[in-house]
Length: 243
Image (cartoon, rainbow, N blue to C red):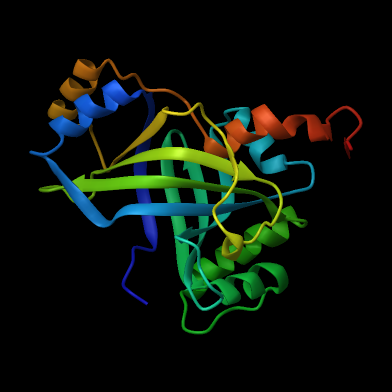
C-alpha cells in the first residue's frame, strides 16, 4: 500500500456553492493550489452508528466535543482493495482524525469481530476498538458517495480544498464493495466545498470567497441525511425503531 497520513489536526470550513460560484473560485485557485494525489475520485464512506443513531443525534446538538466512525474508499474496492478506517473527532471547532489503511476484508473482520490486521498502527487500532466497545452496538447505518475534486496548496501542502458533487446516500447494501449508487442528498447542481486549514485562512482565499459571495455554513453529509431522511425511523420518545 502507498504511504498515507495517519493523523490529522485542522480546521474545516464548508460552503454550499452553485455553479457560478464554483467557477469563480476554481478560476482563482490556479496561482495558489494544484490537484493533490487523489485529484478526481469517487469517494465512498460507510458510517457506523447505534440503532438509535446516537452518534449523529449527539453531533447535531452541536456539542463542544463530538465523534464519528466511518470506513472510506476511493472508488469501489474489492475485498483485497484498500480502505481507510477513520475515527474523526471535533473539539472546539478543530478536527482530529485518526485513520488506518487496510484491505476491505481486513476492515470487515476488524469492525465486526475485533480481529486486528497485522502490520498496522496498534495504537490507532486500539483507539478504534475502544470506541467500538464504548458504544457497544455500532453497525453500518448509512453509505454516502460523491465525486470529489481535491487540491492542495502549492507552497503550503497542508492547505487543502475539495469540491464534492452528486452527493448520494443509501441505507441498503451497506458494503463499500457493492457500488456507489444511491439517492441524491442535495439538489442537482449544488456543490459542497470544504476548506481544510492547518492554521489561519490565507488572505487571498478570503478575498476569493468574498468575490464569489460564498459564505461559511454548518453542513454535515451524514447529519443532513439523518435530518432529511432517517429521523422518522426513530421514535425518540418511545426509544424504538419505527416501521
